[in-house]
Image (tube, rainbow, N blue to C red; front, side, top):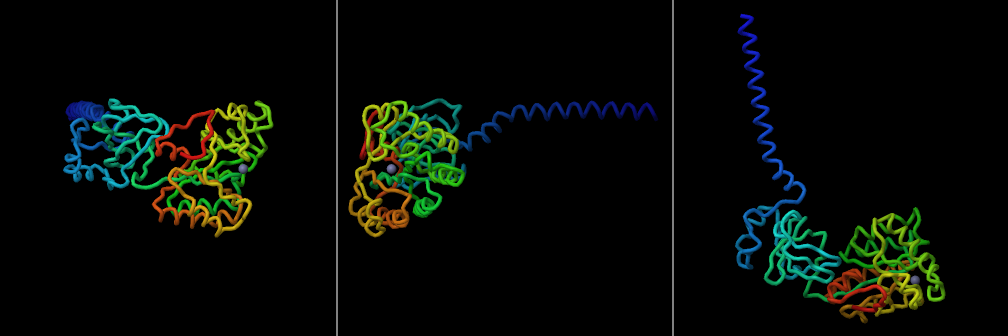
Length: 338
Ligand SMILES: [Zn+2]
């Protein structure tokens, strides 16, 4: 009786050990597939980018939908690179690189799944992380609204509300001296809306009359404050009063962004005038200068966005505008439109 029980106990132990071994083996085999799925997003089953054609893409729409991919309308399928991007063979950065694109590189989006776009560049097909490209509408005109001298805890939020409501982006040339515990969150909101943060110096002096060291200090103090909030320093600058010389450009070591459309909003302080001036002056590739520290300006932004959308404009950041318009943007140069 006792022996039998012992024997049974031994048998049970053996069985348990075998079962654990089998389970471990199967988990180990499945692990790479599981890891790939969770870290890289779903791949499209059975789609071979090398052999795909436009027709096949159309035919596999159901399959794409099954894999969580959404097909984009042909009007919003343009995408552009504002830094650098690698196009991969599959929807994983561990697959082979099909092509590397630099600033201004363009592609057609075929479909997307929230993390990856399947794209076509001429005859090449591949996948790109969505965070690496900016989508734009190729059939529209493009314009950059820019707002200087903020952030303001009182007025800037009106601009952000209007941009959000109209799905528009803008560039904010900020002053380091205006970034404090009350306005920090405004910079964060601007960035989260897809807006660009530019450096407009620390305390708005006339930089052209200053030494290289003094100009550098004006810029780096603002850089540090912006970086502490959004994790990176601005990649574009704008000299206060438009006053610059070789020393200022050297200190910036980034493009100096001017404007093609000076609204003189600071002088007139008249909302309906500003709306009228921006609407009638807007051209493809323009950079519009405004100031988000005046209530008369911020009150105009909602109407400005709506009017420009009616006139078939997309409102993008300065850097995006350059990329979309196929222009280069380099340090040591001043740009007033793209
Ligand atoms: Zn200014």
